[in-house]
Amino acid sequence: MAIAENIIFLKSTLSWTLRAGCFIHFFHSNIYEFKETRGESMLPTLNFKNDYVHCLKSYKYGRGCEIGDMVVALKPTDPDQRVCKRITGMAGDVVLIDPSSGSLDKYKHHDNRNNAAATAQSAATAAAETVKDAFNRYIVVPEGHVWVTGDNLSHSLDSRTYSVMPMGLIKGKIIAANDLNEDYRTWWGFRWMENTFVKETK
Image 1 (tube, one colour):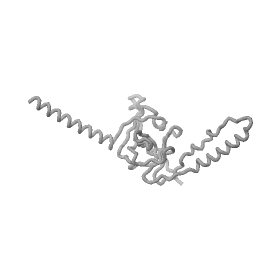
Image 2 (cartoon, rainbow, N blue to C red; image 1 turned 180 degrees about the vertical axis):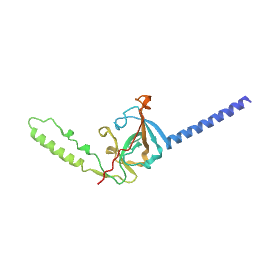
Image 3 (tube, rainbow, N blue to C red; image 1 turned 90 degrees about the vertical axis):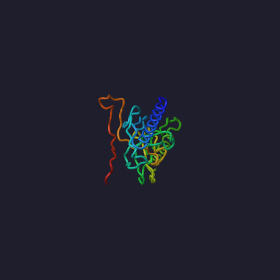
Image 4 (cartoon, rainbow, N blue to C red; image 1 turned 45 degrees about the horizontal axis):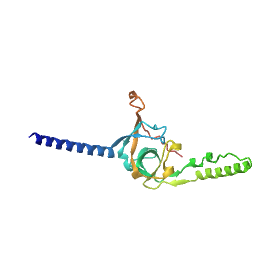
């Protein structure tokens, strides 16, 4: 009799464990996720470590996302990695690809005494052409895609590197964050992540 009761108890426990696991998986995949972010690409909005974001999965696949929203997505060049970026271009938008590629710093040389004038002239010409080219490289974001960048442009691998992002890679929208470096009296640095995008008016 005791053995039969133990078997029934084990079956019941296993059944409820499987149900709980399925519910957690469904909740995590389709409703809400609380996840740590790492890296410098979203500074100063998010810290490079110990920042945890609240991600709503109702925005999965880019549903309802707008320009200026922060999203969690699979990295196009490595689906095993997730990235946190801000949408800076929607389908149909014309985006300046990367004006920072025209930086003059890469054309600074140490002048040689014998050809200092020629080197300076060559560097100046190359720099002028590159800056001009950097501000003339645009892309129209195709349907079903977005253009994403990090807030810390100088330390971010984003659409400027891997081009447009398919909306199917978007896993959710970040609505808030907690900085666990902060004290519990501040609710561990809780703050809402607002969309600060300002639409220009003519």
